[in-house]
Amino acid sequence: MPSSDPKPRERSLLERQFRLEWLGLGLAALILGGYLGWVLYTDHQRIGIEERARLLGQSIVLERNLGGQLLAVARSLTSVRDDLPLLNRQSNGKLLVAQRLRALTDAMPGVRTAVIVDAEGTLTASNREQLVGQNFREREIYTLARQGKDPAALYVSQPYKTVLGVYAVTVAKVMLDGGGEFAGAVAATLEPEYFKTLLNSVLYAPDMRASVIHGEGKVAFRVPDPQGIVGTDLAARRGAFFIEHMKSGRDATVVEGIVASTGEVRLSVFRTVRPVGLQMDKALVAVVSREIDALYSPWRKRSYEQGGLFGMLLLASAAGLLFYQRRKRAFERVVLALEDEQIRADAQVREHDARYRAVIESSSDGFWVADNEGRIRDRAPSFIVPSP
View 1: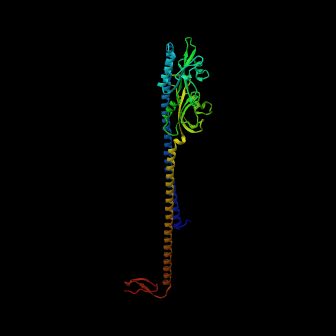
View 2: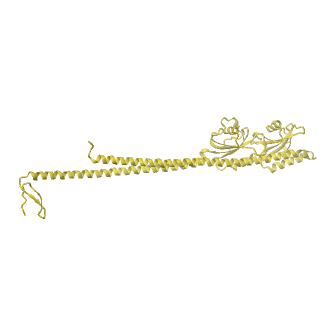
View 3: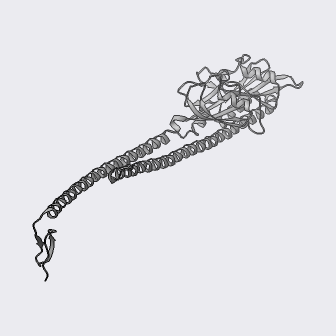
């Protein structure tokens, strides 16, 4: 048979109430934690999307400036080449040609050196007189121009180390004779400092890097360059993002992952520089990137702070609920103790009454109990109440 004692049922109800309270706290923590996680996740996604858009914008800035510079250099070289026959016919033709080349380099901060080489690779004119007479036959730019023989093309050499120990790129326009044969080239060496200044202009965070890569994979310029990547051939690095970008054929590629040349985890944007109206034998590629750890550092800090606050709130709530339940258990024990005491007192009264009744009913003597007003409250069975 089920117990008629109400105390086990009360304790069971109390424990059930406590379990429901803990379940409610867990559900509230789950909802709040889920919301906090969703907010942090969407914030992480927003940062990634915004940073990609910003890097794409900076790559466009680089592409337009580099493209505009290359287009201006190409037009200047074409102008010198087209004017060269007229200048050479003058009695002071060599002087005029040298002055024209100096005017070109003075007017264009992106050009360091301008030269003219003949069909045999001998340098016949330059803005730097000390270079005149040297032979450029072994230079890549001479080989490219001689083999290409396309007067409409701008030939772009791979980056090479100059006598000053810096990497530079040379571009050239081909000269043909009356028979369409190779007659030499007009070439310009791009100023490394100018391009470094240009690259620096798009940096807005300490962890950013900006680079210019030759179409065949060699890094021409990079700022800053703490790892000394300038001059590295990325085409020889397996898994290089540069290779993926060139294979894609797209104007711009956004990639995130480990950079093959440095081992860093970066978000990078590659953009091919090939100006409209300019035929280049090899394109240049502008790259802007950010380090992932640094990019998400503020987000991680906010995550730790909000996670810590959530944990503290959860611990405080759990501690508060535990304290409340312990107090309630203690209160219930006091109430039950009082109830037990009352039950025992009631039992004693009933026992006393029973004994009293037994004495009265078993007595042969007659007696009665009256109150202050003379009313009989109790009597022995043998007592005969007198008539009034």
